Image: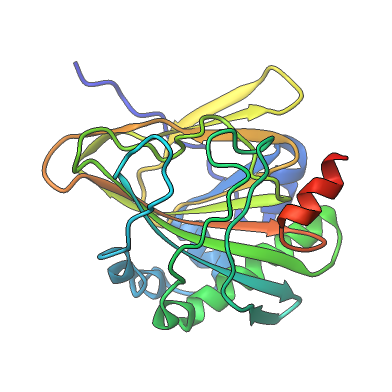
Length: 253
C-alpha cells in the first residue's frame, strides 16, 4: 500500500517573516523562491551538478556511510557578504547529543558554487528576513551542502534525532530527491506540544525555521531504486558570532 505524502502549506514570499514570527517557520514553494530571490529557477539549477561527488562525512558516530557534505562560513551584513577563512563546524552537546562537542572540519564549498550569483542573493534575502524577525544586524552563516544516500541501505538526514542547531534561524533549501521513500520533515514547538509534518518533494522548496522556537528532524530514507538520495543546502544564521567551543562554554556556565 502506498502511503500518501503530506505536502507543506506554502506561504507568500512577502509573508515569510510573518509566518516565522507567528508559527516559528515558513515554507516557500519553488515559484515562491523564484519570486523571493527575484531570479529564475534556472539560476538554482546551475548549482545542481555540485551535489555530485560530494566528499563523505567521516565524522558519523553511528558508523554510517550515507552522508556526504561540504561546509563553508560567511558573515552577511546588509548587502555585504564576506566568506571567512575555512573553519571547523562546532555544536555543543546540548544541541547535538550525537556529534556535539566535536570540531568537525569538512571540505569547503567549491569556489564555483559560492561564486554563483544565486548564492549571493540567497544569503542576502534570507538575512533580510532574519533581520525582519529579530532586528537588523550582522548574521554569521554556516552553509552545509548535503547528500544523504541509500547506497548502503538506510540514510539518515538527522542521525541526532529531533534537535535545534544552536543558531537563530535554519534555512533548508531542498535540492531534490531520487528513488527513495521517507524523508519526512517534522517540526515541533520547543516549549509546547504542537507539531507539523510534511514531505519536501518539489525541488527548490525553501523551509525557514526559528531555531529558538522549534525543534526539527527529517525521518530516515529507504531505497526505492538505484542511486537513491536526498539533496539539501542548509544555511544557519546566528547573531553575535559563530558558535565556537569557548562561546558555548560561556553560554552554559
